[in-house]
Image 1 (cartoon, helix red, strand yellow):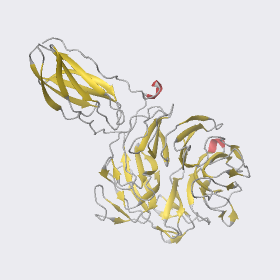
Image 2 (cartoon, one colour):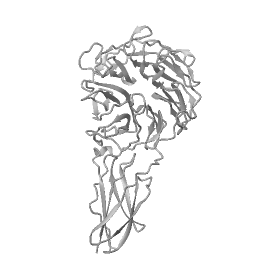
Image 3 (tube, one colour):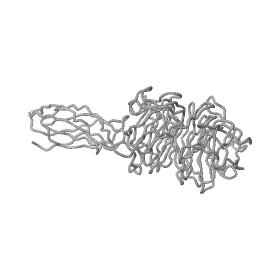
Length: 502
């Protein structure tokens, strides 16, 4: 046989963003077996080997079970072993109000889970939209029972202070507009900020949807629907940095969040903070941004459309839940597509969208998809209103780990023809994989390995590929192809029989 030659192959480098992002490693896109809910998961927290889940649901059920099958009663709250994913007996019911949990946060020492939402009762005791769970024995803490006048939507906790945000106007009978600070024993602190105004969507009621605290900087960053903080009429919209003791504005973030957009998620890693936004109408900001905690400087801001509900930084990667549908101006992104991508992973260093594409559907309720993320011992838990994950039935909860990667790439359809004497050209369209960008295509001639080609691809960008083999004129050969992501190998496609021209 004559030597093989490669002719007309597709480029091996998809335009996926700056080079510094290429070294980031993501979790796998293969969901772990996970219990489900029969409603919406709005919030999650992790402490001491347990994942706590809150929302609007009445039952949980086993992985793979259809709704109504194998259900176990859980009223808006459930607890799971973080390692095995199995449900635990810790199950106080949260009822009254609208009967929903909207925020959860563990104390730094893991001794308590602070819970917020719209409820009047936590387990057997009365509570006013907020409660604390003792993680040692799953009891409702007697020393935390503030009276909050309306829904609590955000919580963050330091060693000695609990910050809450929401739509309330009073806490402990005193004026606290949308944000407040309390001691762990419920004592209201002097911290005070007046949050007013909104221009977002059809709901003009101001609210703090998210907050994150940097205790070493004595700073709290708040986000939500508002246009005025402490009487400021200009320069503050939906995002503000406050002195964590007094509540005075220390960062106004002018120009970060346009009109008709609101901040839905905030988190920090001790150095930077990250946010997710949601907008209504044209010219809105729907994506993610990163800023420096120390001075409030913006590090980057993406341009994706599709409201972002949750963000979580982990090992150099920012994971998020949204329904992104147009990231055309973001490195590694996609143009407006017919479907929505509900999970994204981006390089924290430069916002490049990395090849990690597990997906859900929009689901029930407002049909947003994922609503909450938490990391538990290297496993990413996601909750929301979805009812499928990676096209398979799965409601309310799912999990992703660093390994094992079990999903093989798609098998491409191979064709071949001989257009010149002694030349056989094979053609196929690049495959794609949910958690790998560059795939390897291994070509076999007459059952024996012939050569391999690498190609970077995404589900929205699958280049045409080709390989030209030089053989004896008039000889017939059978060709097949398989694809590997480095761990998993697709089934071999073919064989395709081609006779070389004389």
